[in-house]
Amino acid sequence: MANKNRIFHFISTWKRLLLNKSPMMVKLTAVLLSSAIISGCTILDHTDAYPPMPQQNVNKDALDPPVKTETKSLKEPITLAHAIDIALANNPRLAASSYYVQAAKAQHDIAIGEILPKLDLVGSYSSFREDRLIKPRRPGTSEVLQFTDQLASNDIVLKMPLFMGGQLINEIRATKLLQVATEHRLARDKEELVFNISSVFYSILSQIHVIKSLEFSQKTLQEHKKRVGELIQALKAARVDQLRTEVRLADLEQQLAREQNVLAIENRVLCNLMGLQKEAFEHVSVTGKLSIHETSALDVEESLANALRQRNDYLAERAALEAQAKRVDASRGRYLPTLNLEGSYGNRWDANSTNNNDDVGSVVVGINFPIFAGGRINAKVRQERSILAAFQNKLHDLELQIRLDVETAILNMASSHKRVKATEKSIEQAQESLRIECEKYDFAKGSITDVLDAQSALLDSQMNYYRALADYNTSLAQYRLAVGEEQ
Image (cartoon, rainbow, N blue to C red; front, side):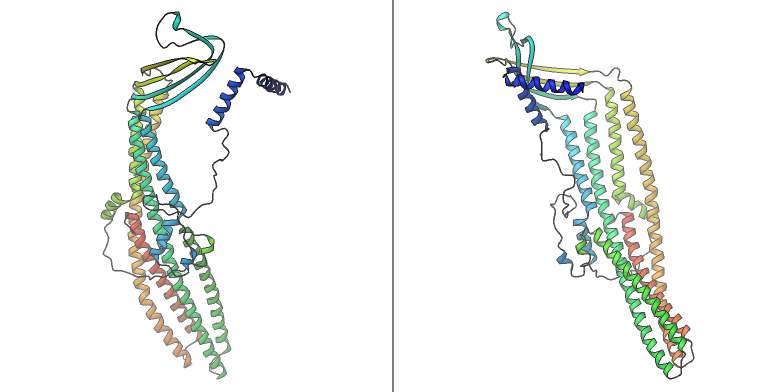
């Protein structure tokens, strides 16, 4: 209650002085209001943290304006190249990385600005209880001296660092290297996005073939069921054979429903990677071919050398490490003295009488020797050195990860290639086996179990073949990602 009374008394006094048109209070109120406006206290159009997100068009330099991808253009099946183009234009993660590049460029410009001269226009108004001396423009006797209790002034002030112990120049170099690092990270994000798109795309193509194999197998069994019914009517087959065929058909139906669900999920994953809205999910379909190429054996050490030379995430970590080394040098520069230049020119006058004013100017060269800073400089150097050591270990860890990525990709390529060749032969064998078992059953020399087993083996061979093809094409993309090659 006491605090509220004090506040109320203060406001009442201020209001009374304004109503009495006290010159001092009117001017002070004007100064306070002007300061509030200039400082942004009265800004009404605040920045929206959650604006509507436009579809972004992100190119290599991340400078193109946003564009829209119309869902009408997706009614036709899209190729892998088209899907990649859409993703590069609309993926929100890639757009975020592009803005980080722009932020790094701005940080570099800030660092450059710190080393350039700074020019300010400064004004002030002071009210005193007693008269104060107005700084005279020249030496002299009492005729040059003026006094006032209402002092106004304005100045043009120039400040410029002359020597900062290498702090500013090393900060400029560090921010430039960090800008390079963010550009490499953007390029790596682009490579990873292309790989993810390729992997999902190949998986969708494989899934389409798997579903077609299931539908073909379902159709074949339905025809066989019809044939079994005819044999039952001719008393050449048992009723149990038809029941076993129906059980197998039910199993195929649930398999088909499961694989169709997997395909629908993969289509949605592809749409998410392409940055498309949910309205596009039903419009997206893909077209392409799963192929296999004869490739020579890849050398691990040669591939690793290419990866260390080309991978953008490795180049980004090296640039970040070099930037941290520059920051260590910048922190060490705090031990050295600093030299600054400051110049000003302006006027001083009595606010009650603006007829007379004194123009004054000065040039000051100041030097500062750090003698004792409470251990802050030493702690800052130790901090930056520790961060540098952490960056060095992160780079070594990335080198180990790159070796693992390269070796894994090479092994996956070899394994999937062998699987494709093996399943390719097994399909022909399974087709011939099914033909023989069906003929044996028709002549009452085979069982329905043998027919169903042969049909199941053919289906498994077909499904394994298309999945192995998808894995092979994915492993090729994985190898290019591991060594930093263009997809």
